[in-house]
Length: 244
Image (cartoon, rainbow, N blue to C red):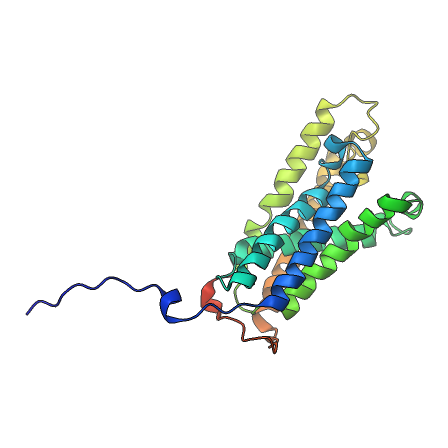
């Protein structure tokens, strides 16, 4: 006896979408902080130069990914893929670490502490938004508003594509600009004119290892950290496939 075929019923028709207004609001604020920092820098500086910094690349990624995540949390839709959200967390996290431990640290060989301390007005606001607010906000979102267990060990290696792409861009840009260009190299540890290619590539390799180590640390913590349950509603299951 043949049984009649029935059309598949989407899960959304059976299970109601669960909105997460607190998560949506927090992520919208982080996206706004990142976008505001980028806009201030572009208004007060040269747009091509501003857009050549890895900090700006990372904050643009934060603005886009967190805005999309905020919309999904508000509408009760599944989260973005963990590969994307985890990668953004890694990049903005390393931005914060390098800024505070290397560039703003007077004991560092590559420090720009005097220049950073001299920032005023909008430049100072943008600096805080891009290097402190967004890294801390991304970390808090991951720790408090995201279910654990979505990240995979392979992600740590896949995330290296972002710094590798930036390294190729920065070195190519530096090679094409005139030697007397003030912003020829965006970061002191990538300054080929000052240190030579051998030292710069060594610095890049060390930073690559830092990216990979921090990526592994994020994945490892994601596997052991407890889920934080908020009172606004339950957090959807890990089967949704990614970070919230």
